[in-house]
Length: 433
Ligand code: ATP
Picture 1 (cartoon, rainbow, N blue to C red):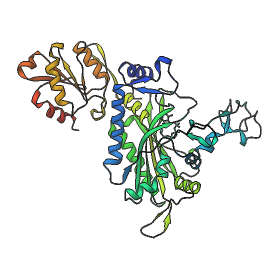
Picture 2 (picture 1 turned 135 degrees about the vertical axis):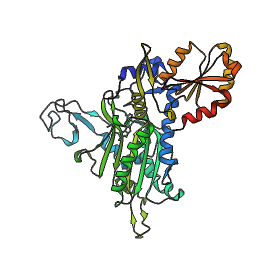
Picture 3 (picture 1 turned 60 degrees about the vertical axis):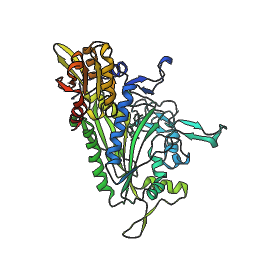
Picture 4 (picture 1 turned 90 degrees about the horizontal axis):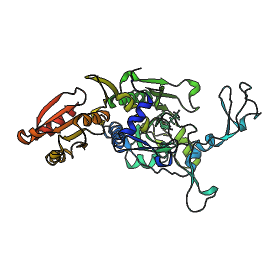
């Protein structure tokens, strides 16, 4: 394992440095919900825009979408979520298998091993609410447990307005909600989280090829994001793990401090999703093949990853403890492209705040900057090492005379004296990879 960090260390760093707070802290928190602080929100936004650039902006065959969190409840009938999650379930206390109560002959005894069963429990993971003033069965709606279903229901509108034809994809970033029975491992499994999903539509003949392509492409994205390759792996699902309609599924896994776990799933889902919506809505989801002139319902290759799990990965992977002059330095070696702050500006003394501020303001439109005038320079370096700021710029008393500032690099801790009027260029060079 290439990580030096424990979950306890990460949780405490996140709180100390304004990355992640427990939701509703004054009320004792609420299980499975988290708030992102000033540093966390910057990192989160950068991860999302990195994904968007890679998946949408840099390609001509994927377009974006942003759909509502609450959709028509029939959406979840078609997707199978209402059915497969709303039945009362029992767990076997011995072999841990889970059964729908309507599918076993005896509610006392496990049909697999004869062990004792728990009381029946509702296991619908969807959060229910009501739309409109009347709270009855007809007004029930759900907070979406995944973002992709509205990609399917808007497939035709998106395809025609974007003037696309399969093979092409639709991408979306947005919140999802699951009433997880056991939220755990910090933000790894929470009840409110964000997903970045892409559905790629193609013919049945092409789906195998596109599936292989996207598995590799998605693995490469994590490497591109700066996650160390040796801490990532691909895990193809075995036949008995696959949904009945799926032709294949591979997880990208990361070696978290609590072990190898799923970061992302890539699946060849056949044409199940569009067929289901066609069946339940009675609408036509087929497209015409340009070559054969025949109508067909496209296959879907899906990639689905959590923003929060990715953020946890970035933090765990970047965390280092180094010994410098006999002292421990905690440093987040985050890819500078996604670092919460790209630059920190320090006036050596409060008296120098005004001229230092001028330098900072000139850089603000180009870089994400934190202006920090409090505490010793050493403490300020420590603070910014802990949130992964790649460059710290100090304006000192000599700066008044020579119009130069000291730029200190997070990774090498080397310092350069740079002329103020060259500073923007100097930093731009440094951010080029
Ligand atoms: P798991 O088995 O971990 O519950 P899943 O296979 O149900 O996950 P998917 O439905 O495939 O997950 O969701 C796709 C991605 O969304 C996951 O790989 C993960 O990154 C993210 N995700 C799913 N559930 C949660 C959650 N409760 N909290 C945070 N992220 C989640």
